[in-house]
Image (cartoon, rainbow, N blue to C red):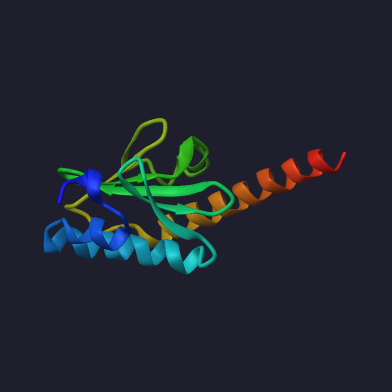
Length: 128
């Protein structure tokens, strides 16, 4: 199955090696625990959690799990992310280290709050 035919996160996880599947399941569970109201989707050929807009994406890469919490999620946690390779919108969690699940949960909480605030300010503008 190529990534173009992926319909859901279960299929995405299943196309990876057992070791990577375990890491993908861990990150999915961590996100679900913090954002149970979010819906799961595949966007940009990656597992995505959606709540009042895109919340976070993640993906299996050659040597790491990519985690995509929007640039704001990386900026807000830059001190805690100093040991990881980051770009404007992505964090690389190497397969050689355990996933920082508590940090991932904190970033998801931040993104939830951010999306709620954006939605709230949009609704206030509509009410005017």
